[in-house]
Image (cartoon, rainbow, N blue to C red; front, top):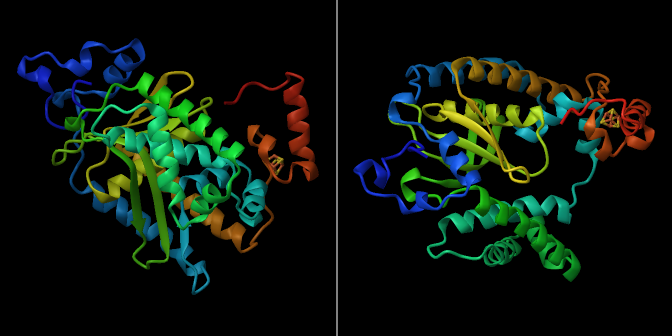
Length: 333
Ligand code: SF4
């Protein structure tokens, strides 16, 4: 990384950078793709933050009026992705009781482990930080804490193995993060409508760099396993929007696919932020409309049919998967 947005590294002073000396090709690629010299960073107008806030304040105001008096609506990337995917599935998931399982918990454990890894002063083994993460999360009084306290030894072992896979891949693909890059893990973002009754919230897996006045410098990174989905780009645009209502917008948003060792980055522009604001307002309207049963949810078959709770009763969804199994559909992911 030439410099993810903070102060120059040792190389800038003409000294060799030990962190850079022994990078594997994946780590070098991360460094090359995420870094930018000062002169390559975009500058955003100072009034952009206020303009985006105003657009959200005004666009969401009529929706707040439609909420029940006591209601506060939290909108996150999952709700937006779900409501723009298949509305019937969105409604089904809203109604389904949430339960922690190994597949749901593994991402949270891995992210916590990476957080510990980044801030650990010694160089720890991945399994050490995974165990630390499980122990810390098990101390919580929330649903995940309960699950970790009561899960079977087999479930705990599965969780440990799957989280370890992610942490090992992270250490293989990312260079050791230097303090000068200002790494922050699990960084929370929040926009509150002036009414206090509609909140846009997010948590970025990893951020690097920081702005310098109107000069953008921060990079928002989401870590993923599995394959590409267009929704991953939308998730990060949503985060960029919230960040831009807080301070100078990020310079870049990027999804890192750990299984593939592949980074997909997108430069943040004013157009991207305006489009994210419009999508957020539209998605919030859909969420409110569907929650209060204002209309019939539409049905949009797609890859998510595989994990849909109403698949047995959904003719279009079963048809989609039958066709997919016979090789009739393209690979959308
Ligand atoms: S099975 Fe597919 S099409 Fe049917 S409701 Fe679920 S996600 Fe939508």
